[in-house]
Amino acid sequence: MAYKIDFNLLFNLVFMTTSTAPFLHRFEPVLQKELLAAAQKKTVEEGAVLIRPGQYLKAIPILVHGSIKILRTDAEGNELLLYYLDRGDTCAMSMSCYMGTSKSEILAVAETSSELLMIPLQQSEQWFTSYKSWRAFVLDSYHSRISEILETIDNIAFNNMDQRLEHYLNDKVQILKQQKVHTTHQEIAQELNTSRVVISRLLKKMEHLGKVKLHRNAIEVL
Image 1 (tube, one colour):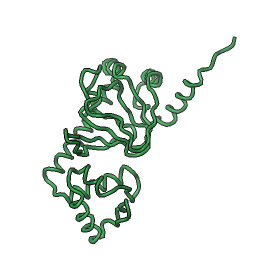
Image 2 (tube, one colour; image 1 turned 30 degrees about the vertical axis):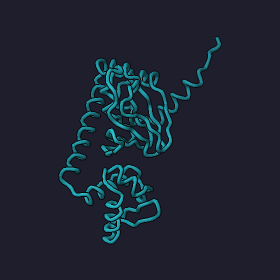
Image 3 (tube, helix red, strand yellow; image 1 turned 45 degrees about the vertical axis):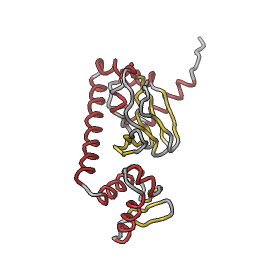
Image 4 (cartoon, one colour; image 1 turned 180 degrees about the horizontal axis):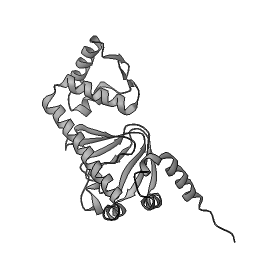
């Protein structure tokens, strides 16, 4: 008897089981199979916009590789960095848009080239009631993201701008896993919702204190 091989399915199974093994192991074997069958792999380049404010979402992104930054924007285009997504993370705010009944309120941008698994919202809702491990994953994601948002609020409310800048650079180093951060003073100012002049002055101060070394379009955290 001859069997027809689905090479696309075979590729997806090999890719997902090897690249996301730590992520998949938290789920029941039956759910692992359903997740592999339902998920679509998506690859994006650095700077690609994944989610825009006002967008209806059809799928939940789970990060396999890379990093994604989540920002809040206003009507005038000003931005504020809320938190980063790392491997195995998902954006809890996208889960609030179940069944396409509400719009996204965040901007999600690839901080680096990234690979994601896109889980259909309807499938995720079914798993929430059917599988304890998926329910725990969703609730843990909410808790983690809320904690990070509260940390951002505390940082804005209780820290001055030089402390916020130092925290920002340390987060970048942790996410990128390298000491040299390739960015501009203007980009930092935009994400911290301040002016380029302020950022440039504070970076010069940090360099004088031996905390950073400034390069053209890059900052080395010492």
